[in-house]
Image (cartoon, rainbow, N blue to C red; front, side, top):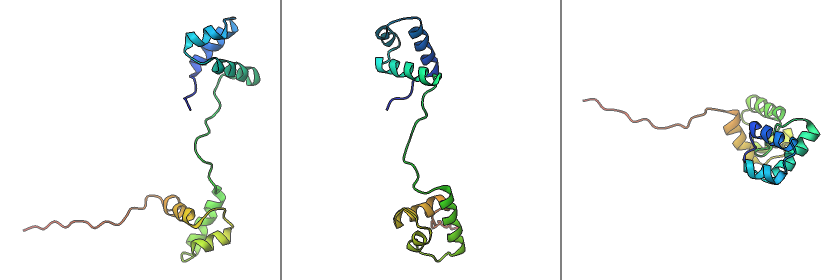
Length: 123
């Protein structure tokens, strides 16, 4: 999906459209598709704003922040609880492997792997 048109370009397109220029000429002048102009005109007439709609990037999270907090509290209260136990206890709509990743990467941020350090011999 291409990036939205800049607000400056949107203003210039609307000025040209409001001055009575044909859409085909505006599209050629500003190197945009005619459909983009029609959508912009419709958006301005419906909302009164030239601003683009917010982008809808990525997946929506399956767990709410409240559920995340409950997971964190339960893990700290019962450190030996299993993933299946967490899912059953909190009625979570995810699999055990997904919950494992959430606990590992989101609830325990900045965790570093254990690495063996080299010892330097001095003679």
